[in-house]
Amino acid sequence: MSFQIKTFEEYQDAYKRSVENPEEFWGDVASNFFWKRKWTNVLNWNFTEPDIKWFEGGKLNITENCLDRHIYKNGDTPAIIWEPNDPSESHRILTYKQLLTKVEQFANVLKNNNIKKGDRVCIYLPMVPELVIAVLACARIGAIHSVVFGGFSAQSIADRINDAECKLVITADGGFRGNKVLELKTIVDDALMQCKSVDKVIVLTRSRTPISMLKGRDVWWEDEIKKVETQGNPACPAEEMDAEDTLFILYTSGSTGKPKGVVHTTAGYMVYTGYTFANTFQYQPGEVYFCTADIGWITGHSYIVYGPLSQGATSLMFEGIPTFPDAGRYWDIIDKYKVNILYTAPTAIRSLMAFGDEYVDSKDLSSLRVLGSVGEPINEEAWHWYKDKIGKGKCPIADTWWQTENGGHLITPIADVTPEVPGYALLPLPGVQPCLMDENGKEIEGNDVSGNLCIKFPWPGMLRTTWGDHERCKQTYFSTYANMYFTGDGCYRSPEGYYRITGRVDDVLNVSGHRIGTAEVENAINMHSDVVESAIVGYPHPVKGQGIYAYVIANHHIDADKTRQDILQTVTRLIGAIAKPDIIQFVSDLPKTRSGKIMRRILRKVAENDLGSLGDTSTLQDPTVVEKIIEGAEKLR
Ligand code: WT7
Image 1 (cartoon, rainbow, N blue to C red):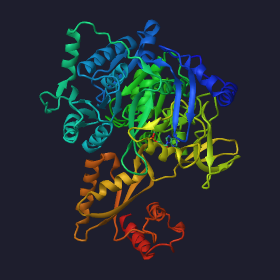
Image 2: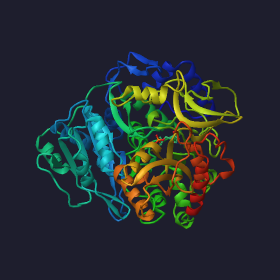
Image 3: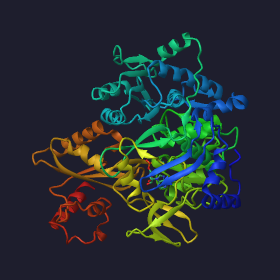
C-alpha cells in the first residue's frame, strides 16, 4: 500500500500535490492497481453538464483488483469473515482463493441465466457472504448491480427495478435479523407483480421459510451452482471494462420526488475507495476490519466490499443487529475475532450506550486500534463514550463525512496521522477541495465561518449521473452554485480550519444514519384514504439523531388512534419501516404563506419544542394556525 500517508507532514505534502497537480497525484495512486490497459487521460471534466471522466481509455475489471491480484501472495488470507445472526450457528470464513472461486462460479450462473455486460441486476439479499459473491459476480461479467436494502418494501423494490429496468433479481427465501425473519422472497413476489423487465429470480436458501417458486421464472441458487459444476470449466474470465463503464446503481433519497439512482463507474470508484480505505483507517496487512453497515447502503458497498477487498484486507461482515441476543453483540464479535478496526454509526453507539457499561466491561476489546464513525454528526457524549469505553482512550476516531454520491470519504481525520476534535470531520482527504458558500452564491473565505458545503474540484469516486435522468443530476448537485458540487450539508470551519458538519440544509432527514426525503414520506402518507395533506419535519431524537414528525390534515370523522396506526402501515407498505414517523400530529391546517407554500421553519420549531424563536409569522395566510398547532403539539408531549 505504497500510497498510505504516515505522518501529518506527508498528509500536507500529499494534499498540496493533489491540488496543484491532481492528474499526476491520482495517476500515481492509480498505478497501484491492476489495469488491463493503462489510461490515456487521467481527468477530463466540467461541472456544468456535468461531464466527468477519470482514467479515460483505461481498461480493467474491478474484481481482478479485489480478488485475482491477491491470490498469488495472499490466497489463503481471509477475505470475508461472516458472523451469523444467531451466535450458536457456525461462522464462515472465505479466503481470497475461495471467494474468487465462488465469484467465478456465480458469474457463470449469471451468464447461464442470460445476463450480459451492461444488464441491470437487482440484489435483495440478507447480510450473508452470498451477497458479496453476487455483487462481485455482477462486476466480473460487467453487469450493473442495484442492491436494495432488505428493509425496503415491495413498492420500493418495484420502483427501483422499473427505474433501472433490471432483468434479474437475486434474493433469498428469508433473512434473519435478531429474532425476526424477513420474508424476502415473498416481498420480491409482491414487487414483481409490477415489473415487466424481470424474467428470472435466483433464490438463495437461508431461512427455509416456505415460499412460492414460479415455474420458468424462479430458480434456486444452489441448483444453478450445481449446473455450473457439471458444465466443467468453473473459471470465468473477467470482462474487460472501460474505466467509465457503470459499475453499479444505488438509490438514495433527496428533497423531491422518488429516490434517484446514483451511478458509480468502474475505475474512479475503485481507486477512490481503495485509497480512502487504506488511508483513513491506516489498515495494516493481517488486521481484521469490521464495518457494521449493511451492504444495501453505500457504506457497505465501499467499505465492506470494494475498498477493503481491493486492498487485500480481511473484512468482517455481520448478519444481525447490535442488540441480539443482547446489547453486547458487537463487543462479543470484536472479542471473538480480535477485531482491529471498527467502523460504525453514531446511532448504534448511542443506542448501545443506553444499555449501560456492563455489556462492554466483561469483553476483551484490547485488539482495537482504530475506530470509525459514519452517517451523521456524532455528538460529544457519544464520541467520548466511543473513545473511552470502547477505544480505552488509545484508539483514534475517524469521523468520516461523505455521501452516497461521493463514493468514499471526503472529509475525515486520518487515524493517528491528522489531529482529532470531537464532532469534527476535520480536514479534507487529498484530492478533495471543499468550500463554504453563502446564500448569494459567493464563496466564504477565511476561518471561523459557516456556509453551505460545496466541493470545487472532481475526485475519482464522485457520481457521474443519476440513472436515466442526467438532468436531475445536474439540477440536484451542480446548479445551485456554478461550477461546484453542492452537498446539501451545512458546515462550520473553525479558527484552525477544521470542518464540522452541521447537518442538511435541504428537506432531507437523517434518521439513524439513513437518508429520508420528507417529500417521499409525505407522498406516502397522502396515499392514505383519510389524509388530505401532510408535512414532514425532523426533530432531535436521542438515539436516532433525527426523528420524523408528521403534521397531518385528515378527514373529520376519523378515529385518531386507529388512523395513526393505519398511516404507519401505509408508510411501511409504500417505503419501509425505516420511514415510519415517530410522531403524528393531526392538525386542521398547515401554516402557509400567501402563495400557498408550507412554512416548514415554523413546523420544525414546534417539533423541536423551540417556541421562543418562531420568527416572523406575519406573512402567513392565517397566523392563528400556528397557535392551534402549538396547542396540539403540547397535548402529544
Ligand atoms: C448524509 C449522506 C456515506 C455515509 C453514509 C450516509 C450525513 C454522513 C456524516 C458525518 C456528519 C454525516 C450528511 C450527508 N453524514 N456522514 N460523519 N458527520 N454528517 O450516506 O445516506 O448518502 O447520507 O449523511 O448529512 O449529506 P447518505
